[in-house]
Amino acid sequence: MRPKTLDHVAYWVGDRDRVADFVTSHLGMHVIEQTDRFTLVGADALRGKLTLFDAEPPREQGALKHVALRVNDLDAALEQVPVEVDRQNGAGYFDVSEGIRLGLVEAATDSEYDLDHVALYSADPEATAARYRDYGFEPAEPGAGGVPRVEVSGAYVEFHQGDPGDPEQPLLNHLAVLVDSAEDHRADAEALEIEVQDFVDAPNTLAVFVWLPERVRLEYVEHKPTFSLT
Image (cartoon, rainbow, N blue to C red; front, side, top):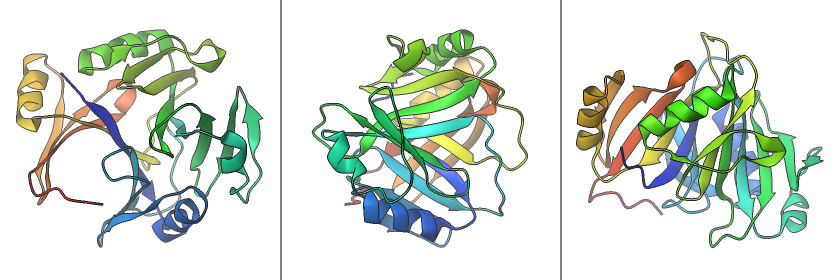
């Protein structure tokens, strides 16, 4: 398992246009791709992104606590946010809609609004962090407040004490990491007896989906030579 970057976080949402309008108006993003099933938004198609999939509302919080983006100047970035902001541990967090909570973290970056971290609820944060290493994530120093976390190329997944439950209509669709070969990762997963949920051959990508602990879905995504999103 050799993920290169944290590529995107995918949500199930009832009104994807509302969420897309918020992040493109206030968080330096643009619409990268839009289909009849999803909208892909980000500041740079080759860096961290958000994918908004159509789904029946309401959605259940489940394992997802929040997603945080990285900026060089937190105060300047928060001036663009038109809703109430909760400042804590050198970051600012705010609610968008449908249970989506985003954050901004100040840290040196060559790509504004790239993914900084994903925060997940876990019944056993330390054990879950250890299990994620089986999927190619690297160990990392604890995050703000001492929460366990893992890393992929400078972006993090944090594990906060809480009940992820087993929602029938979760807000989180999946996490995705970029890899050189989806086929290799499918073979690696099968060799490690990791449950493979799906394999998708799309026009510009190949993707294998597996189940992480506590029923979080992970996509290993490979960009085909035709991948040319901007």
